[in-house]
Image (tube, rainbow, N blue to C red; front, top):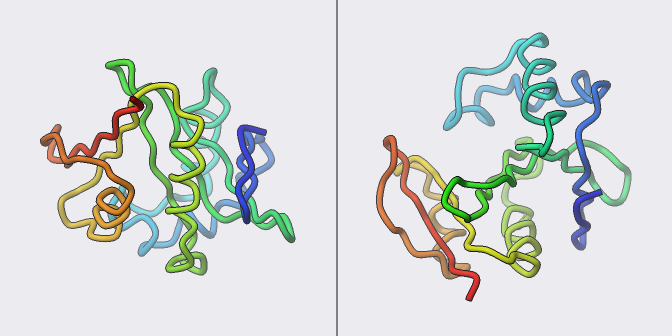
Length: 151
């Protein structure tokens, strides 16, 4: 397990997770800012290539109570010594403060700068970044880049 928050467990993905994550990754609203909804094969490939690689690029998010899938956490080296942070939550988990909870928990243990990338239209992500003290440092490949210094 990577980390635990008040309501979530962050753990490595497993090959058998594909079926449980399919409803989340096939939801057009969940995938709206990312890419087209995933087919079952795309979900399996995503978990294999992004979750089962070493080190993982994404981590499984589970309800602490009940153990149901919530979505996934993006947490990996960013390329300039920082860590990239992001989250993809199933629609039933929106508006509950889980993205803020995850971000706060990972910032607590961060030993480097943390970066969040999002499309300019992603108002919810921008609000979380601003609320938690990230600074918009520019744009990269059409995405806004938000950065919070560790120091």
